[in-house]
Each structure stands twice: as C-alpha cells, then as structure tokens.
Image 1 (cartoon, rainbow, N blue to C red):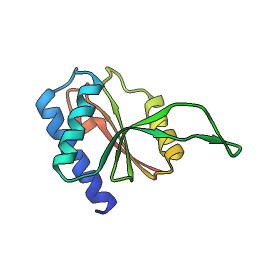
Image 2: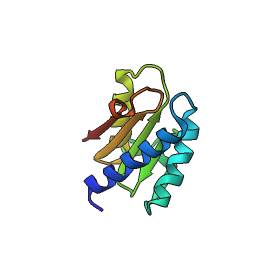
Image 3: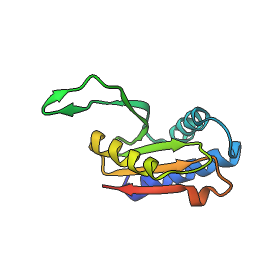
Length: 123
C-alpha cells in the first residue's frame, strides 16, 4: 500500500472506532479497538511498539513506546484529552524521528468533531 492508502485506511478505522464509542473513553479503549479495526482491514499493526534510543552511539536505557505502528511505516499517537496542546504535536514528531519513520497520525478522541481532531504529520 502507498502512504496515502495507509493513512486513508487509518482514518477510516478512526472514524469507525469514534462512531462506536464516541468521546470521553480512556485512550487504552480506543487503542485496543483500533488494533481490531485495522487488523480486520488486513493491516499490520503493532501496539505499544518499543523504540530503541541512542545518544552518541550508545543505546540508552529508556522506555519509549509508540501507541501504534501501522504497516511498519506510520506512527499513530492517540490522545483522549479535553484540550490539545502544542506539545502533543511535537511529541509525535519526536517519536517519528526516534523511530525513523517519516509519516504519523495524531488523533484526539475526546472531541465533538473527530474530523477536526486528526492530524497527518510528515518529517
């Protein structure tokens, strides 16, 4: 699948999960449901994927995890917050950089309009 096809399928999965549960649930519920939805669509999804972090050639003993890694290409960062903050947008860019992935999707499920709460990020 192309990057556009993958992100199209991710967005479709997000809409289905949002329509089922609506706003206000825990992030972990949306995460688990998205794994089911994307797997049904034939997509490879890794949940809570660890990221190895290096500094000056040394592997650091830190525990960074991506919420979802789809098709080994797209970092998906989930939120269920009342207010989106700039730091959340920066956070996914950092995760993308650490994971060496150029494409990401940031979504906030705790909203009244899911269309306004999905952001595609590119490095």
